[in-house]
Length: 112
Image 1 (cartoon, helix red, strand yellow):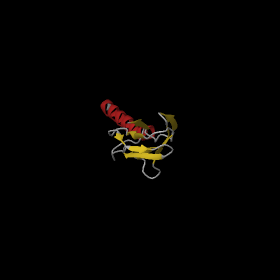
Image 2: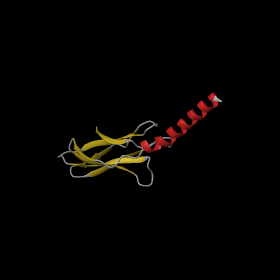
Image 3: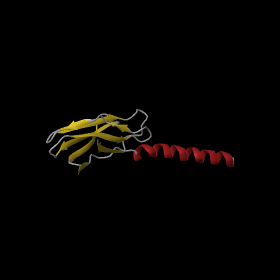
Image 4: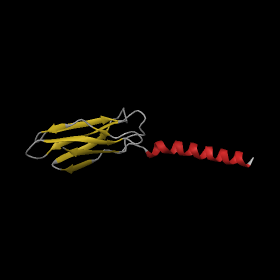
């Protein structure tokens, strides 16, 4: 009887943990930041929470090439497409996490 109670208690703890994990993996809100001459806004797609990216405006006098860096929870992280923004131009780099991902946890960008 005691072993049965322990087993039921352990099962209940696992169920509680499994239901709490998706809440911890909620999408990050859009962020805006200026770095390396780029004025960027990150985003997560409204209809597909596994798709995200970054829109960057080039505030310099020359072209800047960059890509999105997407953290995908339990799935491998994703590098978005490489794009070049000319002075004053806005470009977008995006990517999609694997279907088994726990969700997008963070989006950043890298200047190449």
